[in-house]
Length: 186
Image (cartoon, rainbow, N blue to C red; front, side, top):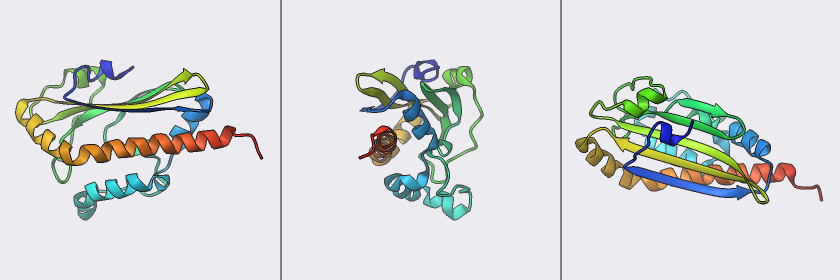
């Protein structure tokens, strides 16, 4: 599965990537094991965004939670050591997250058109590269109607740069950990 299967046309797309000087299996293991406590920028930005949720008592995570477990949409596919794909619908611009989203499989997400939502697809993909593994992250967002797109666009002006910063921090943390594992001892 890839993002074309769930959000083939998007209103917003962010992409980040890098080559990690480590085998794909090691990069995959580090991505899967990455904990929130290792991501200070993500913690700070997430806490700022989550203040309303924290105040309502809905937050159930902790610092030992894996990063992949706090992605706001469910995992739809995992193909070790190649890709993990997440997808769902959200009302992210609402202070406490909006209505409870329906649970959708890939086909349901691709076809979902109920007004008032954005469809989100996110993947981490690992492919062989000269010198190691190409690790990439892509996020796609598609609004279900024009009014929702306007609301999301205003939200994204503020949140989009932070969202990209989180992905860069994740890729950097995975890179540092994976390369440290395969680096010869001095």
